Image (cartoon, rainbow, N blue to C red; front, top):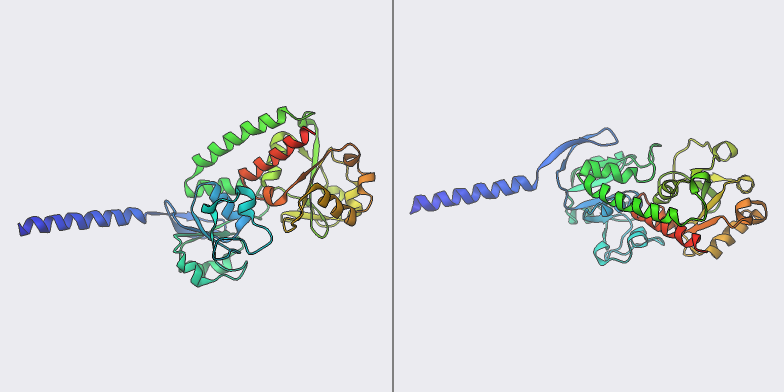
Length: 324
């Protein structure tokens, strides 16, 4: 009997060890900062070091994001803009814990979340050594110059084993693109667009957003503003490039897509027009798009993230515009 009990105990112990080993299976990867690290095969608790560019793509891929900058204890945003709520709606399951204000991480809160993976941006290498003591830190390029549309989410899906999820969502999205395009008054494949966002000045929006992905998938071609502005080199990086009010008023795209600052509480067409009037007086008298009513107003908090859901919000705005 004693030998039998011992054998059973050994089997149970070895089974437990097998389960424990399978639960922490990992693989070696090289991140976008050129660092070699081991990450879990199936991350279960991820902390993201940027909400709009990292957390939202991970959420869309179905990962459990347990922590992000700029969140209160109850999961509410401590800032004027809540990208998670704006893009995905007020979902109680997405009330994610905070790890401190942006740029000032609270290590105690981070440890308490017990992440098995931390995902940050390529330029956050200075923090990676300290954070790696808590969990593996994978750094994803977000503003290196080659990102566009869904590329950040696509790469995260490939690295973390969710490519099938991403491709299924993209296929469904492309069906929606065809549906919206068929309802537009003119063939967009013959038209140019200029997308701007209004902060304290007018800026031309670059490629890293669901909004730009949707506009281009509809068939619009980017208006060649780069050679017509002097505010900043066209090859610069970032979400947007500043334009002077005089330069803006001289541009002549077929379609103007306008967003207010995502920190603004007024995302209405009237509010955005008022800000444009204050920065570039008379723009609506000079620009062809204003005279022909070829302007679409977007809620920047909904459409500025590099997610499929942001692109879907953009398509809905185009659909509403086409019915006017």
